[in-house]
Image (cartoon, rainbow, N blue to C red):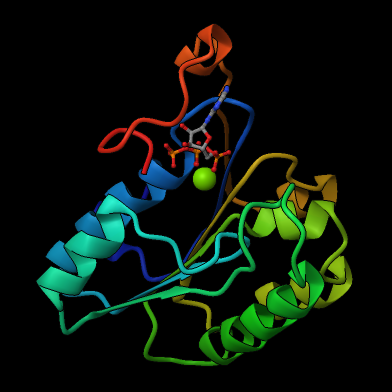
Length: 177
Ligand code: ATP
Ligand code: MG
C-alpha cells in the first residue's frame, strides 16, 4: 500500500446514477483539491449559463486556482444546439487534458453529452488515456457509457431512494441549484 502522499498518479473518477449528489460531489472534491493548492478547472457541460448558488459563490470567491466555466446549451430536454455546445466544450476540455498545469479537471454532465452522442466516445477515451499522468479527472452525469466506466479508476453510482420531485416539488434553490 502506498502512503497517501506517495501517490503521484492521477485517477479517473465517474459519479453516475439516477440519484441526487453527482455534481455536488464534484464540488466537494473541488474544495478539497483547492485546499491543497491544486489547480482546478471545472467545466459544466449541458447546462447553459444558469444562475446557480455555486456560480454566485465561485464568482464572489474569485479563487486564483479555480476556473469555472458553463459550456452548455441548457437543460438536455430543452431545444438548443446541444451538439454544437458540447463540441465547443470538448475543445476546451481537450486543452485542459493537454495541460501539465491542471491537477484536477471536472467535466460535469459529460456522461450525458456522451449518452446523447453529442460527442464521439472514442475521442473522449483517447484524450483521457493520453492526459498527463498526474492529472485527476472527475466526470459526472447520469447514463455513463460502459467503456468510460471501464477506463475509470473509481465509479460511484448514486441510486435515488426518494426525491421531493416524485411528490411534484420542483428544484429547490440552495439545495438543487
Ligand atoms: P446535484 O447537482 O444536486 O448533485 P445531480 O448532479 O446528482 O444533482 P443531475 O442528474 O445533474 O443530478 O440533475 C440535476 C437536477 O435534478 C438537480 O436539481 C437534482 O436535485 C435533480 N435530481 C437529481 N436526482 C433526481 C431524482 N432522482 N429525481 C428528480 N430529480 C432529481
Ligand atoms: Mg449534475
